[in-house]
Amino acid sequence: MEHFTDFTYYRDVFLGRLSEEEYNSAVVDAHAEIVSQTNGRTIPDEMQTAVKLCECVLVNAIAKHDESSKMLPDDISSVSNDDLRVTRNSADPAKARKQERRAICARYLQTPVNLMCRWV
Image (cartoon, rainbow, N blue to C red; front, side):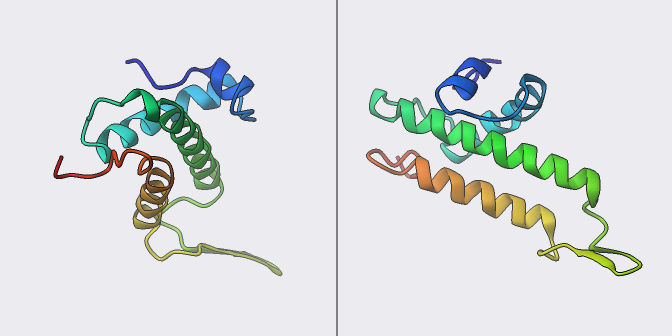
C-alpha cells in the first residue's frame, strides 16, 4: 500500500522523532484515516503538502496512543500503586481516539480545498 509520506519525509521534512519501526507501524492507520475522512477523494495538487502533514501528525498521535496503551490498556480506567495513581482522562478511549483523529484531519484537510466534505 502506498502512503502519502515515507519515513524519509517524516524524519527530514516533518522532523518526526519516531523510529522507522514505530513510523511503519502507525503510518498504515494514519493513511487509512485520511482515506476514510476524505471518502477516498483524489488529492488535488494544492492539498498535497497539507495531506502529508496530516499523515505525519496522525502517525505521532497513533504512536502515542500505542505507547500509552502498553502502560494502561483500554479496558482499565485507573491504576493505583501505593501513593501513585494513574487515571485515564476519557471514560471511552476508543471514542476519544476517534475524536482526536477527526480533529487532526479537520485541521489539515479543509483548506484551501475541503477534502472532508461528503457531498462532493
